[in-house]
Amino acid sequence: MIKEGLCSLCGKPGIMHSCTLCGALVCSDCYDAKRGLCKKCSAKFR
Ligand SMILES: [Zn+2]
Ligand SMILES: [Zn+2]
Image (tube, rainbow, N blue to C red; front, side, top):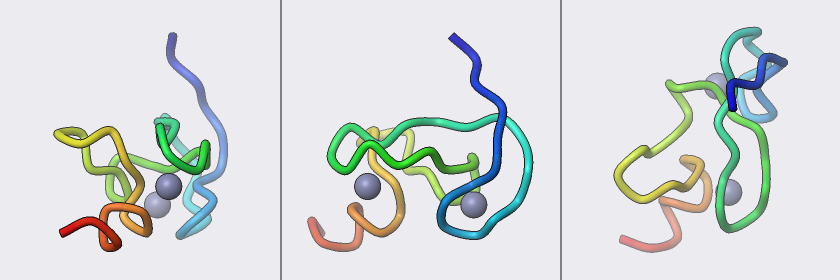
């Protein structure tokens, strides 16, 4: 399902992805598709 909204990290409007860890809706720039995590959570698990 495609969700549109505002990125909770950078505030940009667009297609959002939800982080599997914190549930934040983030844009593709702020999303790590390989891990299914937002950049913030992705940075915690390197
Ligand atoms: Zn973003
Ligand atoms: Zn997250």
